Image 1 (spheres, rainbow, N blue to C red):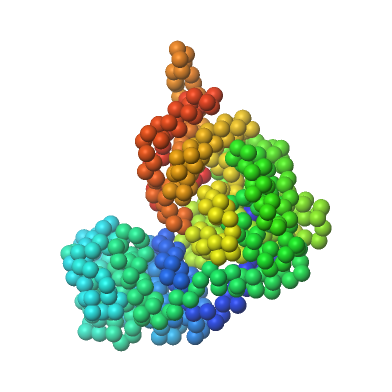
Image 2 (cartoon, rainbow, N blue to C red; image 1 turned 30 degrees about the vertical axis):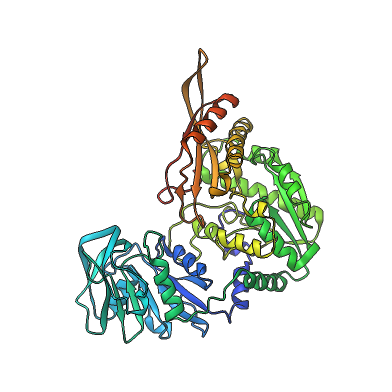
Length: 532
């Protein structure tokens, strides 16, 4: 669970590789990553079209087989004029249709005798298309004066006759182009972000109309392929799965159970960092799923490991190491366990370590970061190709309970990363009470399913308050609620003022030790959903 630093010391076997073998005949789009934080959003939008896609770093282009139908080049923090600017050999792409986005568009242009210069006016944020060639297949259905999202400091100028301008803004004439001889297309804006009104249509035009993808990548097919992959990988071995009660580990459990049946052993650990009554509630929810579920109380182990630790990465790694201790102990008790299964999903992987390119690491996740250098269990991760909403769709295709599927994401380190600073049993109990009031109120007021994730954060800050005629000096908690599709981006939820006032009042009145409640109105990016 936690940041993998020395893979050579870990026998890490991910279903990613086996899935790739099974999917060798599946049509797909190749996305080459030049280091943009938006690269994963491109993949997300292509997946929404029921088209399978893969992200590879620009300098590790895979062998192009006949099932690759097109290529998308991502943006980048680099300029094409930088000495260390990333480049590719276009001849390796076998004359496939290519869509260049931002840096990708500039790279295509530079490679085909265009002039790319520093812009006199840097375009960042919303811009409007003043001209659209709707006759061009890429821009079909895109309207003039529609919003697009810009983020570039270079512009393409002096294009040869082989290029055709198919979209412009007021400040950038060559906002989009078509290179007729090569079936290449370029966009100076980002169609993958929601701010580009017709971005999804443009991506669909490229993937479906130009690349001729059939849109056959469905949850049912994923389930079919994954079960085959698990059977091929695991065979008759026993698997231990760290169950969290959330949608990711639950869907992973059902998938693996369908593949190997009673050879799957699910362990749910009470690490002392769960929500109020979460341990008993989760065990109850799995009672009718036919799974081997073992509940383990390990509060003391985790609290001891967290003593004196305030740095968020130190806390994550401590929690990760203790999880592994528990799992290895349970594996010994059960006997002959060879595999540790996890509900790791794609955003966990790409935010923890740049396994697919040069994009920046944001934080380590308990599922993928902090693994010990020596571990006696091999790893199986059937969901590490999927985004959160894709996981829910897969679960729905297997007729899983909506209560489980609609459960908000909850981090593996639990309340340990929602307590800023050192974690103590007393702080956990304080946060549990406040969090329970917040979540219960969301459910009661039918707001729970309107929010993608909700959390309560305990700050290491005390402030003066007045209760009755007495002075108080107590802790502050932050209420956090966001809307999102996949966790890659998120906006703060506009919860009703009266609702927030009532929750604040109830927390302050009922939870002794808290006298101030604030609401987090930051979005991701620039903030993250969790505070640590």
